[in-house]
Each structure stands twice: as structure tokens, then as C-alpha cells.
Image (cartoon, rainbow, N blue to C red):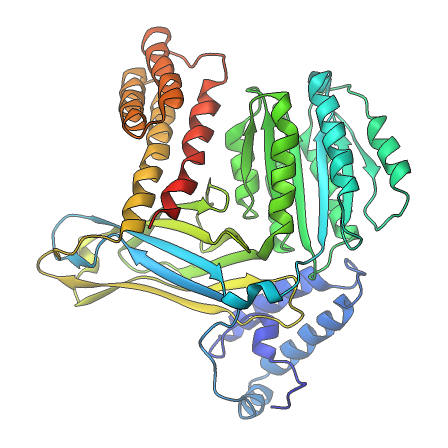
Length: 492
């Protein structure tokens, strides 16, 4: 194959043994992202033409056979990332009971990652300006938005949308040298009305699409202090549209009135994250931290595609870092981003049924990882991911890797608060209180005294009052235990 001719399989993001159905689906996904009707950024038309040419060749069996004959041997080693999988047990055991096995997936940049320039940003701040945001919250939001605007690199794009029960574009997407006019527009924002997140998200997505490019990190940061009512399904459908174009969404909630479950679901559909801002004074720090994380993105979209194996179920999946969060389950999972200085770590919990343990080996997962790196003009071929374990009559005496044990110990704390919340939601407050007492004991043993006191207060409150307190402690516990996940994975 000539050196200047693109690898059509890499262009579509499929393996060389891909079925016609896989090729067709990959073409439609790529065409949706790159079609000239949606994207006018320089270079996108050429990429779209490459996608069309790849599909015309690979969708025709005769042309595909002729093309395959020109290809050099397939290189299975990925040139841009390292990946490693560590298991909680060296083997499965033949038994009549279901078994749990955990797999820790680690994806990190290769050593020469720093040679690849950081990609430009296309970020939209979608800011709640409803009546409840008046005062310190809105003042801090405006000051931080102006700070981010001043810190842009020449190649970056920042747009700002304000919403209440209607949405308004405060700063439109585009590389605009008139920063003073943009700052004045931000400073003039006033609070009024209710909270309708869909209107803000829709306007924000439209702005992102105006400057969308596969060579940029395209991301929406939503900041709100309240609940949205009646438009949750529309918001989630919008997040699915964003995910199809590799546009991330991250949500930040101020105070304790907002719906953290909804924001988790919204962000999870795109591989984004949610964050809790307890006090207005923390708005600046957390927004700036999020912005800096986007600046340091190496791979901005890692997607796992797989088919379920008979007798094996992924029961739970959680991203431990760079930003902790539950992952939406399904045959296509958005895992999140890989940062230059922080690998992507995901923990999977598998349930294995006895009926699956007939042979000497069991396939837990058979799929592929698709990785998008905005700074690379050349498409990256997918990576095969095959997870399997030996099946023996007796368990192995070998201890699990320290990294897996450490990650599981921290993740267990987070799941304790999940169980407490689920029990309380079902009306079983005694069980919820027991889960929190157990969580507090573990936190105290690890020196997390302040968080343990908050947990004990809520345990007693649930037992006596049959409800969570109105002090925001439920979110303090959730995001406090989530914050502990980073330390657990870094230990060696």
C-alpha cells in the first residue's frame, strides 16, 4: 500500500476482520461527526471524503478483497497508548455458585506522548442564571468565566450560554480578538426565572457544533444549583447526540438542591463527570481545575465496545480516575479521557454463572477499545480487548495485585454509601443506618475523621428522623468517598 494512502480500516475505526454490519455502522457514526453540513472547520471535509472513500471500498466485497491484498501485515500493538488489565483472582473455580471477579483496566499514554502537542479546546460554559443563583454564586461564576476567557490560548474557542427558563448565548463560539466586549457581556449577566436545563444544553450544544472539529477537545461544562423539571428525558437524549459526535458533557452542582443522580446520568452518557460544589467560594477552584484537566487531555474519548458472553455479566463499572464516576452500562461504553499525567483507570465487576464454567478457560469480555486523539491527524486503529481467566477445580493461593486490592478497598467505601442511599430510598432506614455506621468505621480506620463524623451524623439522623438531613450531607458523603478513589489507585 502506498505510504500516502490512508488505511481505510483505521479511517473507519474497525478491525480488518470487521463484518459488513460493523463497517456500515462505523461509516454512519463517522459521517454523523464529520458531515460538511454540520462541520465547516478546516480539514473536516477532507476527513469526510476519506470516510466516504473507505466505505465505498470496504462495503464492496470484491473491492475490499483487492484492497486487502495491498495491505502490509497488521500491527496489533497500539502506537499511542499502553494498556494493562489486572484481575482480582488468578483463576475461576468450578462450583455451583455464581462468582465475582474484578478487572482493573489501566490505559496510559506511551512515553513519547509529550511530543504530541496539546490539542486546542472548543469549550462551552452552560451557566444557570435562575433566581436562586443571585448573590455570591453568580458573582463568582462571572468572575471565573472571565478568568477562563483571559487564559485562552490563541487557538482555543470558548463560548458561554446562560439559561433560566430560556437560554441566551452570551459569548458565541469563535476565535474572537475582542475579549473586552466578551468580558462586558459576561459581566452584564443577571439572574431571573426558573431552571430549565434542556434549553441551556441545547444552546450549548449548538455553540459547540459551530466550532466542532475532530482536531479539538469538544466539551460542555454545565453549572447549576437547582433541579430541572419535566425535561430530563430531553436532556438525556441530547447527551446521546453529543456522545455520537464525541462531545463530552460534565456537570457541576452548587449547594444541595440539584439532582446528582440526573447529572451523573447526563455526564455518564458522554464519558464526562459530575462534581459537587459545596460553597460558592469553591466555584472558581473547581471550574479552573476542570478547565486545566481539559487542557491536559491526551485521548479525549475512549470507548469500549463488546458483546456479552454466555453466563457472564458486567454487573458494575466505575471510572476511578482521572475523574471518578459510574459508567453507563451497555454494549457501547464511554469510559472517559486519558490525561497526559493521569491514566484512565476503570474497574469492572463480573458475575460468572456456574453454567459458564464448562471448559478450562472462560472469556469474560471480548471487545475493542476505540481511542480518539484530537492532536493526531491520522486515524487510530481500534485495540482488541480480550479478558479471560483459567477455570480450575481449586482456587489459587496467589494474592491479588496490590493495585487491585487498593482500588477495591477505596471503591468499597463509595459503594457503601450507594447501598445506604438505595436502602433509604426504599424506606429501609435501619439498613441504611447500618451501612453508614460500617462506612464510618472504615473511614476512621483510614484517618478520614471529618468525613466519618458527617457519615455518623447522617446514620443517626436516618435512624431517628427516617430521612436525610437538609444540610447537604448526602452529597458530602457521596462526593467525599468518590474523591478518595484517586489515592487508592496510585498506590503501588
